[in-house]
Image 1 (cartoon, rainbow, N blue to C red):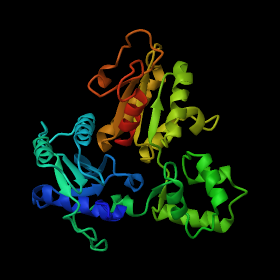
Image 2 (image 1 turned 60 degrees about the horizontal axis):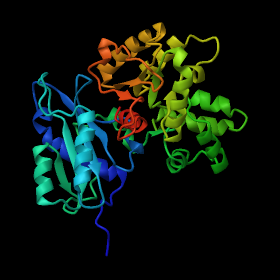
Image 3 (image 1 turned 90 degrees about the vertical axis):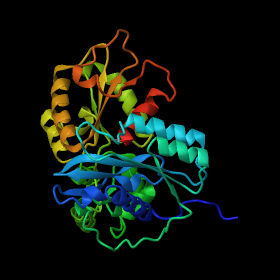
Image 4 (image 1 turned 180 degrees about the horizontal axis):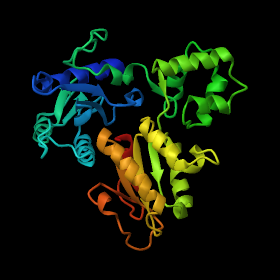
Length: 360
């Protein structure tokens, strides 16, 4: 018997969600007073498991005013999945009624079956159920839509070299004649600040033609070099932060750590500003230990928060496990959902941090 599941590709999955977002946000997209546009959330090319993620954003004057989240299962929606969805939406501050008067956020769950009781619970919690057995999977991918921000539709081509799995890297390098052993070396030496850094690490191993091909792919936005998270920390806490960074890398998270991303002699504050300005960093984890917030960490925070306000990026306060006293959490962080490595919670603090980063 054929398994009941969503059988479409990532492009078809996104186009299905796009059509649902257009229906729900129609009054805003059709508004003659304000101009709204739907944009695809960054780096969704790697969201191949459809576990839970932000997929689309509604923008007005380049400001994110609403987000669309989704989760997909290839089996019937169960109570544990419903509870997980509610927790995930709470962690991203999902809201359908905003004090600012902005449009509502959207939440979808895609599955082949759902009981009447759970459908009612989803409805009460403003989660929209999409029956994948009743939806057309083959949508016209070539039809241009006037409401879609084409500059943001990265899911079709832009593959993040710092986080993509091997099969996607191979797809990204198609036509360059870069062979599998070289791809393995590239994977083992991630992350890279940009293409220049990648080429400099392996300068004797790329032909001029291969370098030109990669430059062309970067220019066409077929590849990109984004970092998942900037680790904002007091230098006295660096050993503990480095341990957490190593665990994040093992889970496929690319991190920005000053001693690794800055060439000796450069001003790392200047380099950080350049990284933020270029949109290569997607979120920040602000680590707080016994030593408090260092003087430069406060400046990093100020620069990054300005970017967060503009682009709706995520800031995650993190209390380190070695902190023996009650830390003084800065006022600007107190309203944010934070992770406490002193507590053995369920889920574990590392899992909470990873979830927060991926939703950034």
